[in-house]
Length: 271
Image (cartoon, rainbow, N blue to C red; front, side, top):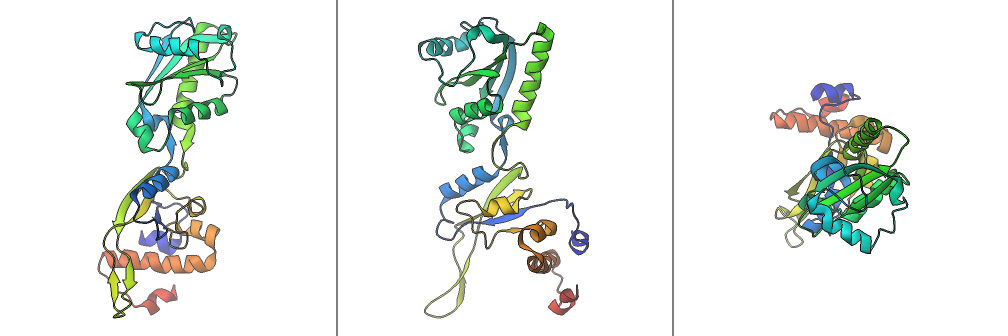
């Protein structure tokens, strides 16, 4: 890490942000979770239990017993977003079983996921899904029928499955793969005695795997003045050369303090 700091490495091993929340909301766990979910990158794979492909030739019926009630409900009240006529749908079916707990944990809902898929593949797919409160949260996706043989259509559906699970972003920033929460002390001055004290450990902050400083600084409830990155090149791009100077000093002190090594400021300032 010391070499990375001194050489101002362009690619560091563990890029990370330290995200502070605005002081008036930093004790609110719900707001912390909201910020965490809005930053952490989420794809369909993160909320998935099971993905299956079936040959289910009749769009008005189904060979899957568990989905019969859903089909009947859609016959009574068809989806307003669906633009494809039934006779244009492929006989191949992509069926996702989703984890309702993970969906709620990531502050998503089934309708958001459906709308995101429609926006990516407008006019190419038809989607049916259960309610988030159902015993099983299921999404059925059919593609538009192509003038190809069955094997080609199946391969196209498999490609779609891969894109939906790994490439399509539902929420957050692709640069940030994981966000961790922890509590910290904030120093303050006692108005009566003037002594420096620390608050109880009930203020939340976030740390990330991956960096996207400019994007995160614009998030609601984020205290942009205290939020920092350990990627010096990103700090230069976002905040400029003076911020880089201070960041190098801070990072050097952090590394040296971890090993209880004291170096006088004047020696570090020479750098």
